[in-house]
Length: 143
Image (cartoon, rainbow, N blue to C red; front, side, top):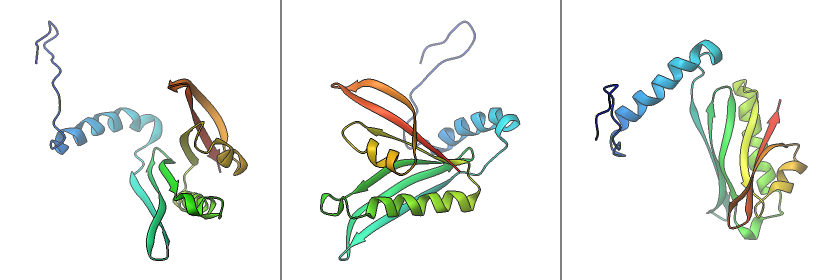
């Protein structure tokens, strides 16, 4: 930790210090409140089961009036079966029920950009050459 003329310093925050991490989030929420209100955050977690075993799922987070999909994965044996579409459809329904403006997510060029486009998602950004020549694409679907 080093002091600066403005009497501030920066130090690593241990992962176990969840109280300080939450206080950091609260600082941002307080700043955003006049513009976005104070929408509640909540996780959305869906598990895809096949023959009693985990075969994929969707992990997301409701925040700032949108659902962000962090992870959508389907086991290789079930890809093309409609399971991915079903997971995303259920997530969209939950977002609509909650009054969200839409869903946003990102995917790599080797993952599923065409899948999302086929389901009505619009690309709004790309990081070219994110890693080893692969692009990372950002999608949204407004309701």
